Length: 337
Length: 261
Image 1 (cartoon, one colour):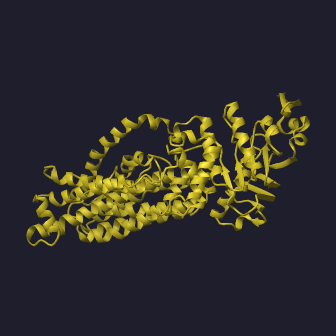
Image 2: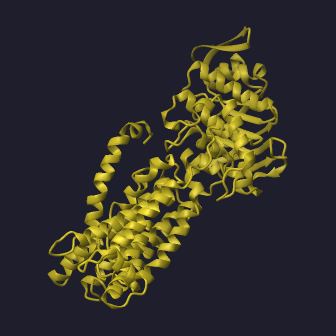
Image 3: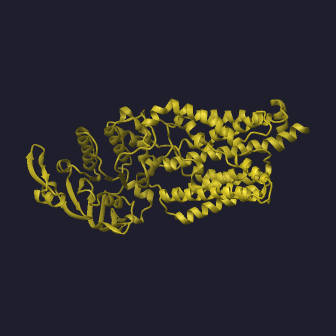
């Protein structure tokens, strides 16, 4: 029977096991190294310093990394499906840049230190404003080209605003703080950050996953998808908003974390037969694994100041990506651009 | 056919404006079950726009009725179950397996999270068999030749088992053998009870395979009838600007194109 049933859940199970292992590792690694037993003891109600370190410092940071990584991976997979373009990534519509600009503003002018909750709140507000503006200007029934162009304009404007803030920062320390913040970090992020971001992440997951079948139909192009009953303007709006609130919240909380959204879907795409709907879940899991692995690496690598996770995601992601391109280049060449 | 509706799509006084320009001007035509209709006309006549409007993909003035009901009153999903649309070019954006691509034809029939039902599987397999695509059903669609891709695209449209099929240049850039294969598949879809409209540029193919030929010129439908009545040297000269002769052959009357006028 050539019409195969769904190819089982082996990939997803393998990724979940990987995430479990990385989670344990993440609870162990830090300035005070813990054994697996001590980490698990601390997690499940252990008293003393281990319990405090694991439950109040490492667990929120780990959960944030998992949720943010999943959001980035899912956003990338959804956008690549919507745009039928393997190069699509979450920064496309300007929301992350707007979040970064708004966050930079509040840091620069002393409203908050880089780890206060005011920063993510401002970032989320920035992302929402940019996406509201994008939808208002491009219109609810806009074509893809119009949406992309308007998104590009918003992204460029937000980028310029960030540069302007750096330029006008009242003192060099503020500028330095912003520059470091922009590189992305999960250091010192707490349960408060987790609780602030979680609703946005979960809402974005629903918006992006609800259109899974539409991404698959779009394999045939927009006209054919529409003829199959896909409501393109609605799908586009849901994806733009889903990416904006999810990735906007991620950037607002942890700064810019590049590459996860672009790479994660590609790491699993082949294993799901390039199906743009089937790639969503493993893409999200791979994104979570990539970001958590990067955050563990950041803590494990000895450095005077903690390395920035946004730097490490690229350092980890690029070799994976290049290896994948190398092994699949023949197939990639055969695919239409 | 799993749809209880008879295949009949009727357009009356259909006009489409794109960017302020009148592309389709008052088109009236009916697609009947059991007929393959060839839509012919020079480049820029508005054929693709007319077909997209008939598929419900473009806002249009005038009336379109599907089995007596206004097309606009149908939900997108309901419309998709009744009209299969095959766009130009046979484009596939991801290297998905052929069977998975053909399964997209079942999109309007399936629920969001439900796996394919047995009826869906049966329809997919029928479409693969009809188009002789079963042999490469597991291959990535991007690795196929142009002719194979055209068959897969057609299989996808057939798999929806919609009573009406609208195909935009299904034979374009195919070798002679595949042109015949594709036309033969369209004939079979029509004579099996479907109403099929295909934009065709090759007048010989239109003359040989179509039950009816509709001629479009500068936005208007200027002729509609049996190939023998419609494809006359005078009309070919007027619409296409080509000096032609009609030659009787063993497969029927065939236009021979001599030179541009």
